[in-house]
Image (cartoon, rainbow, N blue to C red; front, side, top):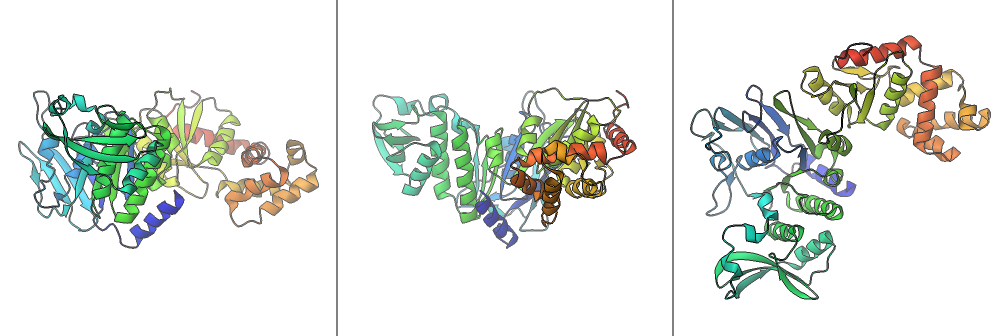
Length: 481
């Protein structure tokens, strides 16, 4: 993944993807707040949207489809009125959608102030492909396919997938297909996907949902023009984990080859793990609005859509090493409260979540903790005034490595020499690993041991208690709860 992702990053920074949809803001539409728009930024050409059911993922990709005129002779543009219509139970009014496009400074505005949709002039043309969840429905549940199943039906014409598309389909599904095609019959112009294996042909009426949906997707992918926008709702539906991962890898490759922007929705950690941090967007509903969190880890995204109970305070950290420091500091304080730490990604993600908590827009008490070198109003900084590795190794060294001989079971002269040698490496994040390699322990064991010693031997009790108190204050939790 890293090679393909880095190639796409280089292409993006080099000026490719000029037709990219870079951001979209939605106000007062299907659960999006009436008072304040939610802004979603697309910082990578392949973006995965995750969130609980009802958080607006499908609304988002349908709104994105309306940002452009449909390119191609005789093609009709996607219109908001077809996606977001009034019904006997719903009235759509006072809606605003603002689409920021990379190719032009003026955004495309889509509004429905009263009874009619209004789209600003200057909507550029682009090939748009929207694949919704109907692609995983069995054909006999869809209108128009009854004629195909009549006994008098005979195949009238067919269109073969290219060898590459067939090969990619087989790779993703882990099957060996001798052929893949779409056929129409003498009784209907409706096309049916046909796969062939050693035992013969079998149609979409008898294929699994994952097979039928993937066959349809690859037919689209082999013909999709350069610079298109591809929107896929529920990418992971009916696909096993290996197929999900392989499909995302293929989409990344396709995006690089053809300059295609892809926005997809998912509930799968396997999908999220295949895209870089800047390609992940978590939608969370709280406080009467939808919040968009950019760049969170797959682990946090999945925990956010789980139903597990939350502790007294949820603490967002950059990584597992920072989480360990926070947990040790809280455990060493005289305060009494339960916390759960979540590594969520870069400090900007920590700040996003902490800001939401400060505004009362998360459904549980929470705050963020950042390195001591960073200061944000909504976050708590770790003690030490610098990055954790520098503070912990530096303070322990200044204290002459207290108790390291007993904790590691290695002579003091040897273990202190190994620790100080590691500190000469330029990458401070590698220090625990370097020590672990020398003493045949994991980096996590080394880090956990050093953090525990640091809190016990180097950090003043007033500092520890002050850190715990600030956590409670930022999370709006009563002290001594």
